[in-house]
Image 1: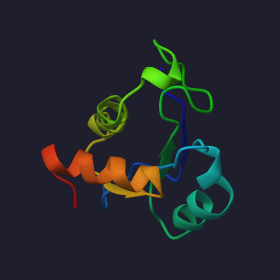
Image 2: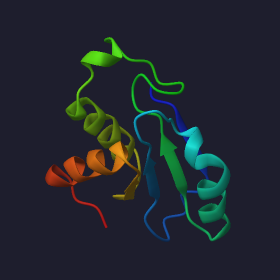
Image 3: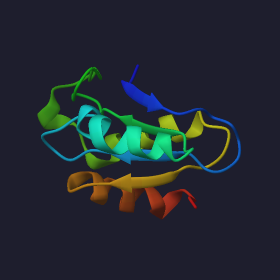
Image 4: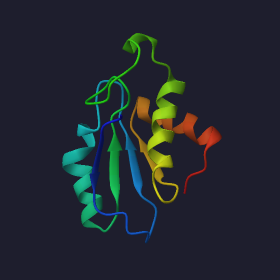
Length: 107
């Protein structure tokens, strides 16, 4: 199970904001300044720790995890939400978001 840090509520008034971290980070990097900020503005904000990062386990050694695996992680979290989220990435997370958007829609 992937680690997901959430702030705000899923109230259905707009899309959730899904944050994707870079290579040497995890969901924690979005927690202090971003998740709380957007939640205070009424958004449901959440950040995923990609497999092998933070509290997310990996079924294989990290050196064998692919970008496609990370895209699957983002999709798994997005698919659990009531509507398609806005997906926001930093550094490697930005690349993962680009690859995610090749096969998934997002606002």
